[in-house]
Length: 246
Ligand SMILES: *Cc1c(COP(=O)(O)O)cnc(C)c1O
Image 1 (cartoon, rainbow, N blue to C red):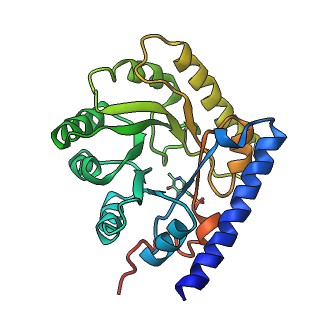
Image 2: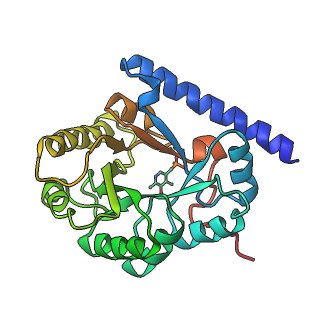
């Protein structure tokens, strides 16, 4: 059974990697400039182990409690690491400081302060991405694009946060134009940050693109694509969070 799952996920991982390679070729980019982050939210431990057996070591999770629970269950495999990609409440920063190696959803000074404090206490530092609301939708987390520069300039005191770049979720739409407009906004914002000597961080990274739009994101300069369903299979019920109830 485990072998079957390893082969099955190995197949879908190879297919996704192939699509990433083709997207890179089309835009004249080096394949090594794009990192695939498998998103394992709602997926069980067996699937995570099977993907790990296929060479994946860092997994994205959007809910702190779910991620922490999985990290505990997989503590026997220390080569598995965790990237928290969802909004963080200040009171959960201490958990992230303990088990995560990357945090992609920084969107407030309160969280920056609390996470930095907890990381200092753990004697750790992690890679951090500032989340931007590139679509302007009210339902989305992240800073409005025009607030990001001032925010980046205020991150200097937090020495345990290695600010690596920006993260966004584009508008959920069939329209390449509307999705592409979000990605273009992110590219321009990253350029401004790179030119801004007062900003804390290096802004080499642009985390954007999911199962439905990662090729377009790569064409717009994404350096990290966060992909769940195209690897693990559909999440039938979006509310069906792991572990399953009942
Ligand atoms: C779920 C999720 C993804 C992956 O979405 P898929 O459609 O499964 O590829 C990427 N980023 C974030 C922040 C997510 O919550």
